[in-house]
Image 1 (cartoon, helix red, strand yellow):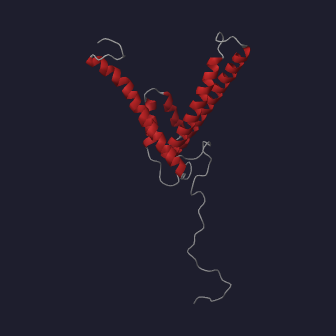
Image 2: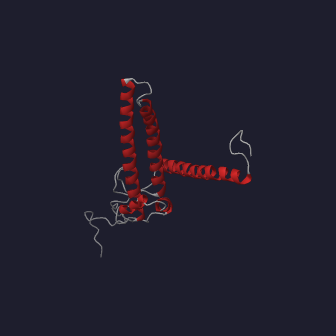
Image 3: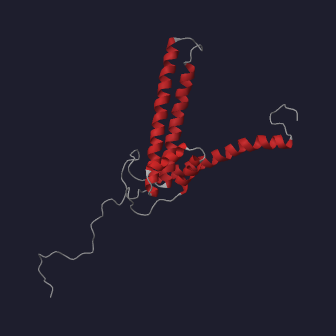
Amino acid sequence: MESTSPHRNPNTDIQPPSKGENDLTPPYSPSGRFGRLSYIAWVTIISLVGQSVMLIAGGGAVMGLPGDAGEAALQQIGMGAMALYLIVGLAVLVLTIIFAVRRCHDIDISGWWNLLFLAPLVNLVYGLFLILKPGTEGPNRFAPPRATPGWEKVVGIIGIALIVVAVIGAVAAIAIPTLMNITGTPSQPGMLP
């Protein structure tokens, strides 16, 4: 017989929220997980920003080479630009490694697998593996899954488009001159066959 006392606890089916449903670590932290689109988005962002700053800094460093103008002020700008170039290059390298470690965690493998990036040709296959392999469902030994925000999805899709354009451009840069040599077509304007 049930008690009808107003002081007893009510019976409910409500469960308390489980801790750790989403990985809330910041993107620059090596602990945590990155899904495929998050990984591509952050690598795209860091690559575009890093390459832009390094291009500007590299231009400043070239301006400051001795013998160009011979001015001490211009050489100081060149030295500062070279230092900026090295600092930004190192920051891009470190962040890229962190993003790859987070991607490994999503696949449920150790971040030490990123040493495969040091092996020629193997690094290409391993890079494709990181981009194409889906992450584990639910929590794994590294962290719970991380939700991919909408803006990361958009930037990730833009990153995929940039990768496709780069691959097509590389193939065209190799194939067109080779095709022109095979067919006997001049490869430069003004050349005779």
